[in-house]
Image (cartoon, rainbow, N blue to C red):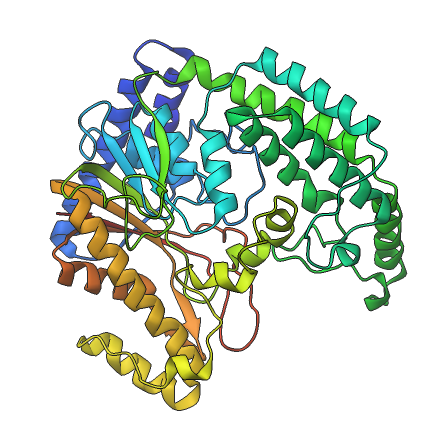
Amino acid sequence: MTTQTHQTSTIIDNNSMGSSDLKSLIIDRELTKFFSAYEEAKKPIEVDFRELVDWVPYSDSYTHYIHSYPAKLIKHIPIFFLNSKILVPESKSLVLDPFCGSGTVLLESLLAGHSAIGCDANPLARLIAKVKTTKLEAEELHKTKASIILKAKRFRKIVPLNVVNVEHWFSESTIKQLSKLYRAINEICTGKELDFFLVTFSSIVKKVSYADPNLSVPVKIKPEKYVNDVIKDRLENKIKELNNVDVIGLFSSQSDKNINRVSLLDSVTSNDVTAEVVSGDARKITKNIDCNSELLDSNSVDFIVTSPPYAGAQKYIRSSSLSLGWLGLCEEKSLRDYEKLNIGREHYSKSEYVEPIRFNLSDIDVFFEEVEKENPLRAHINSNYLKEMESAVSEMYRVLKNDKYCVIVIGNNEVCGRKFETQKYIRLLAERVGFYTKLVLVDNIHSRGLMTKRNKTASVINSEWILVFKK
């Protein structure tokens, strides 16, 4: 399989004509083999998506790296499925990602010639996904950038923002420069340009903070914690750099990079396809982001591909907290309020898990009965996650057309030293909703950035399970 893929990818790289059809042929040939093997043995098939679509670069491409939003789905997986004529036979189909994050699937849908809609509870993710899939004129963006920088440098006074613990995370100089930039962006920009420069602004916030760049969730750099003098000196030098960082210069540089990324979209995407984030809740998919919007029509979606959050293992809101603060997105809602909107959250009061959750599926219920004896909170975190995921899967089933496919990318976890077979439980719940399991794949890829071994109750997730369902 690998040899054939490499040989064909060389043809693709050297032939612009018909390369899309060649990609589809390669993908569907492999997919047909997978379907046949799974139908015969009903066992998961090990794959490597980097090899299956080895013409896809690891490096930056188009607008994927416009913002370092954590725990992104590797683009190879949606590329494989979105370019399959078996799964998505019609061009300009409507693709749904009910857990769209920063828009990887939405962008790849556009690149594959399809329209896309997405949902996400995190307002920062929704903003990034919007910008990532929006065409803009590079020349106009460069002019606007110059105006922003000029105005920011001319400000003498700063307007204080409601950023929690701002002096803990940023130097005085950095606070002043960020405040001036934010004010200049909002006074100069409107519409799509405003969104673009706010995302660019957000993308440098953590870089100029005292947060450890090696961790997704903000943790302040503390040189004094280390005995090793080399590490301690390196971190102390890092803090000195942050105390005097040229924030406006970094914003200018990041703007240029993002403008170049956005400018690529115009030449590779059709005006006939669009992408939009339509809802903040995968359990209630609406026609647009307005909370009073009507529900999305039943049987209206041609294909679903998504990667839901993991139970109690990911901290999307906490990892976004610095940007949410600087963008003014935490003034009406606290971080805890945002977390409550996320499936897979960890924080519950004792009153919320008095009654155990049961599914009337022995494989699931027996697991939670055992966990509850040891740790009722962990039992509730994971059982409530499955309950909410069942609601989300039911909603996917509702909006998907008959005879169409749904791909869910998920990872197993560990709870109180016990293997939590997330993929198995999601599969059982999906089948109860009405889906038929057509294929199960497993890719031993590295974790996506927020899989951290916090304590004895959870472990690092190092494999992705790909569940292919048909309605």
